Length: 253
Image (cartoon, rainbow, N blue to C red; front, top):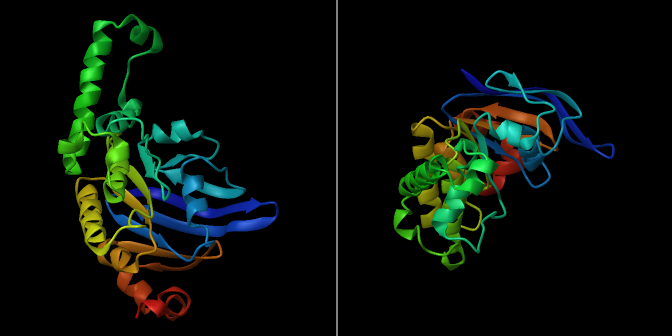
């Protein structure tokens, strides 16, 4: 089954093309990486897939549904979540409270019921707490649930953002440079976590500059060059591509 299908996608800003005639597919249940230098259009692509930007042309389908014109929360309701290159963590909340925020797409209680503190709301709160704890346990962070977020080291904050995204039970998780700022040991652990996320049935779309991580865990790789497709294929095929070697991987040895 196809999870993401992009056809002849275009996005321009003031006449400058950030994404141009981009076409690719991502199968369900894999880790698919998008690589390229700064300015290649990677984050623009993520913003198009999550509804923050609207395409100038072309089509985007997630699990067969055309998402053009949908608002970000409508796309999220299709089972799409995202992590960011720059951390989006509520530092004034506990670890558990941060992850509970990620459960809002799965909660059913309305505003009036919440204001009246009806029994259904209390049951819902318990359910949300349980879902959040399950996400923390998956990320090996359950013992940190009561800690304030601002007391965590950077690497743990990265994992916290992932746990919050997983609390929404996504079918598609977009990860924007999860290894940025991590040391070698943390990067290795991050790679193992991403593989575990994929093995549990979540499709992962990854933007990452760490080529060791990308080539070590990806099932498919797409290379962008100034918003255009330069190459795509398996990690081995991409690493052998002369244009990719010259443009992006030459300095990696």
